Image 1 (tube, one colour):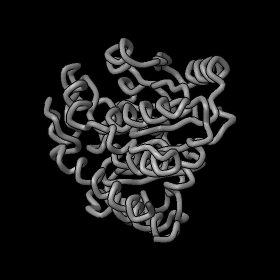
Image 2: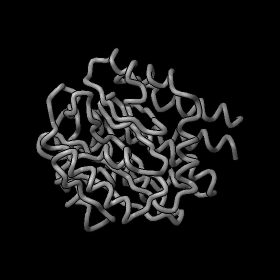
Image 3: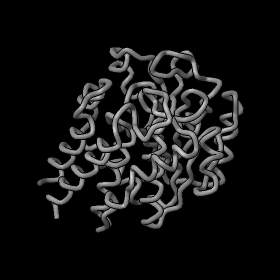
Image 4: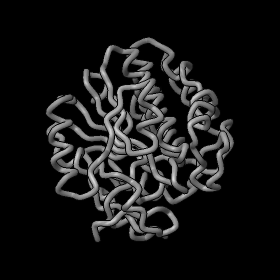
Length: 278
């Protein structure tokens, strides 16, 4: 399999179910976007990863699973990572990961907060995985069109002020990075994000976009990083800290209404694609 064929196969796999219109977005993105994101992260030594989408007073499972998997994969390759998230997720993760809290409640304060944290960490890349993105009117909305501005924290400013490559993963249109494809998002039934990024990745479940990146990282490093991901264990860990499924809003070991076996199947298919190159 050629590199171009692999890129095409991975990108198609990640949107094969087309649950929320991401196949339409995939069609307008410049091919090779997962590989380009992975290349940037493969040569990065310090990486900020923002995640956490507020649902029902807590956080959803989609986003943190992929963020934790990517954090662990990059650290296994020698990088230093930080997870950036709002309450209550940041408090729940603080005992097990390097965490930077999103504390600012206004745009001005968020810009100051991002400037300080970026100066402290000097990242080589900033990644957003299923983070709410600021809409054109300045507010933040969930998939139901509800204004969640008071609960989500502000991560957009990290990407806007990064001074390094920025990568975003989303699955519906209201996430950071979707401003890159605003014309397409306006065709979907959602209030889209206006925040842009350098490299946008789309997937049926945002966690799976992180798995696509990890597939390349593992292949280039000669390590089975995909095999090290344990979605069930990560979901159980998050569930013990109060996570909910973003669709059902229930504390279950699911992602966007899908059984964990769906994510495990994506990992297995990615492994098979990489094995064709061995």
